[in-house]
Image 1: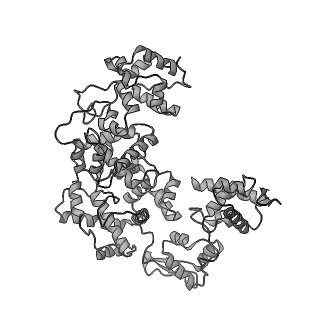
Image 2: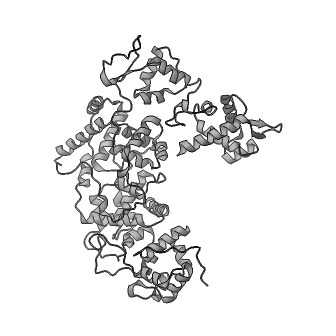
Image 3: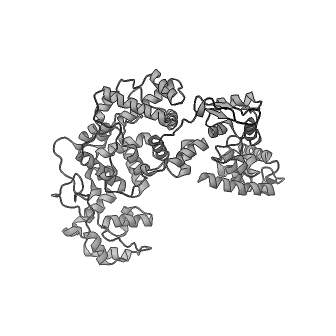
Length: 587
């Protein structure tokens, strides 16, 4: 006897059977294969038991589905006979109308038994049989026309998720773009995508993409995009671009210094010159620095983080200068009929509900305000805005900041003795700064110099020099610590109540607060340390540090060693404030 499922999912008008099955499985929090087994649907071995006309199932299968789901047989037959939507031309790109439609049973079997690689190769998400290939393998033809990674915006549309490593995910998705209708093995496809692209890495990202999105939409996007690439002439010859940059310096040290000085940005040393060359390499080739040839390749993850900070700090004037320089490089090479950058338009695929997010629709203003005001890592800012780090980096690259983060020629001048602002001889590069205000912010409120410098738009070194000139005591690294602005992004100390403000000082302030909340829920330090995964002595030291900052006990002590009791009134006050603070800053 067939078990009755917990609820009925009524299909949409025109929805085909396989789409309904996937939606039903997602609602039940199971895989489509598990649901197909519960419904008793035929697998590959029992496909001969189905009627061939219109992809219909045998009558007893329809009855089983109706008994388990509560749907009528008429509704089930309607889904089985439904024709999935095609593209604007009336058929899936790259397919032939002479090939018969895949039956509902065949599509169901493909969706539940084939690997992602096989589903891409057979283009099963377009509900058409695999076409016969003539001439060169389509993967070879595509590889010669494409960059060595998927275009950044398209990668974000597939997965707006920080759990995907962008260095390998984009190149893996480029390999996936080569798969539809190709006779090559996955190992050969990975080799076409790049010498350092591994077969196992491509397979891993495809499996993870299906698991995270919980649907085959991403595979359909890649399949349709691959066939659209076959059908269109691309405006950029990426192979020629790669040959152009091989062995070239792209930008000299003196040229970079002239561009940076004109834009009022920091020139720096050889490291920033190297980053400028890597930026031009990405600009010209659309390539992946993880796969790039020397001297553009970036092996270290820390170096890539520094590079992304460099790109995020480029002001609009310097970005324009680098773009004009890249256009001159193309013109000198005789390439005058190509745009500097290009990505396929979104109407090349029929999907409009992206598994990830469309970064071209993101407003850049909140991102710039957060980066300028918080001085927090890009990953933390992205998490607070509900987007991935790569999403943030893409938007910042498309919409550079109007002014450099640390202008090189800004001068700090105190007001005159009669209280009037100092004359701004240098125009916008001179800041009139009241030493009393700086003393109040730095000494009284214990704000850090980097936090104040970010607000003023000057360099920390200039602000430190100004403090020394006006007898403002500068905290030493080994001395008392300042307000932890990174653990309270965008918040002035005056907005934080005591005793919370007293404990938000120094490094790891957020960690100490989180551990205090865990400690308040356990009967002993030993239990709390075990729950946290930290050593008991470390937890004891952090508790004592919090109590010194608050000026009193936070927990009642018991005579028994390592035992703690209920929270004191001061501890309960801190607990409530810590809960509110951690919840607010995490969102």
